[in-house]
Amino acid sequence: MYDVERVRADFPILSREVNGKPLTYLDNGASAQKPQCVIDAVTHAYSHEYANVHRGLHYLSNLATEKYEAVRGIVARFLGARDEREIVFTSGTTEAINLVSYGWAAPRMEPGDEIVLSVMEHHANIVPWHFLRERQGVVLKWVDVDATGALDPQKLIDAIGPRTKLVAITHVSNVLGTVVDVKAVCDAAREKGVPVLVDGSQGAVHLPVDVEEIGCDFYAVTGHKLYGPSGSGAIFIRRERMEEMRPFIGGGDMIREVSRDEVIYNDPPMKFEAGTPGIVQQIGMGVALEYLMTLGMENVAAHEADIAAYASERLKGLNWLGLQGTAPGKAAIFSFTMEGAAHAHDISTILDKKGVAVRAGHHCANPLMDHLGVSATCRASFGLYNTREEVDRLIEALELAHDLLG
Ligand code: PMP
Image (cartoon, rainbow, N blue to C red):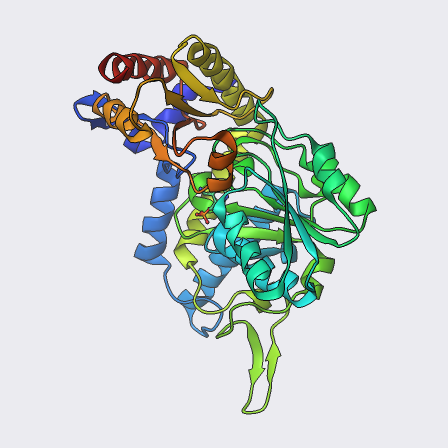
């Protein structure tokens, strides 16, 4: 039985007040709060177990290396990867997707080759592909969502043509909460011999993920949304793809030998991890993922589905609210505009006075904003510790905003 009050007690920040009101933290899509076990692990690592990793012949360096490297196995378990050598550490999803763009895509794309992506991608899954368009003449093929914000996997599959070299698609939209049937996309793409990159920044937070079941080639996650430290993250890269990749960032750690005339790279995954990494951040992410696995991602997903259903029903009751994204089975992420309100920022400022933290803006998803015909939305994004009572507080604060602005 998922006991949300017990879960809340693990997150010290949730008991604070903001503007004299209990904090209602609904900005999890941007970054999630941290449980005490993650905070303790970070403090413990710096207090007792810190040194640089991989190069030491001393006790602390070996200890830090052991703790850090153990996280690779934890990520593999969390994502359902068969081999921890298919996990590359990154500073987050942004770096992960850039790694794929520079390391895998750039060397094999000719002018006129295509990348298929959806209109609801985050800029982190757009701009690295625009680099290839600008520099190498790669063509970006966009697939639209329907009026509810749903993405028909068949439309993506139909967009795959003879020149398509990659499909790059989010698992869950950070704006609409739409869940994409990435397995259907991967199954069809594999038959056509086209690799698929899944941006799992939001997906892995809200749903159980098994990369083998999905059948993707790349799956990127970011630690700070997974209740871990910022600056942590990882990407699953299927063995065959990793073997095809050239390194992206050069420097220490990713080499075996360097001379005046040549460089011999380290074996993957280290080949793709240059320089001193976010040692303690990754150790903290490992603890966060263990925490999630102890709660059980199925249980987290079921709790959030209940919150999503309740929030959908209550938000739909506000007939002056322009709710964006009503696709069935969506994650607990809600974007909206308000009749009469000058700007989403005005709404969020009033909500903040009530202790309700939401985000306003374009959410790094400008092509989606264009598609929706809005310049900005207000977004309430829920996490594993949010409650129905917090949905009620959001609704109350929105009613106040409507009274003041509408
Ligand atoms: N993709 C999606 C869908 C996201 O929501 C985000 C974070 N807002 C990112 C990519 C980028 O993640 P990060 O900034 O942690 O690299």
